[in-house]
Image (cartoon, rainbow, N blue to C red):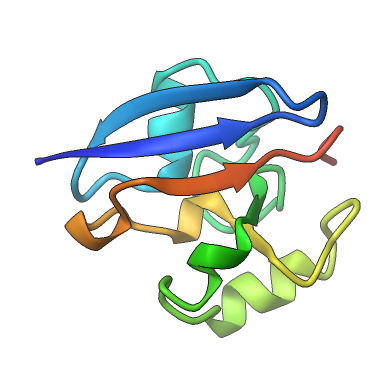
Length: 107
């Protein structure tokens, strides 16, 4: 099943993509060429360069943040309360329509 996703960059530009169920949000973004997802560690939860801001409507609908993700988010630039690492969000059918924003920069 294809999962529809919306990425909004720091300038407000909206990009809609589809991705296969089971991929991570980071993989989907990288395969679609979404700017703002650096993914320096390739999805190993070791760099925080795939940070996204989850739309308020979706925050409670995603799996909770695990310890490795919580620890790595401490190193994320411009961290917010709704920050998540895209490498830690595995896409499911229930995430169809997920809306996330990307920060101005990652490091």
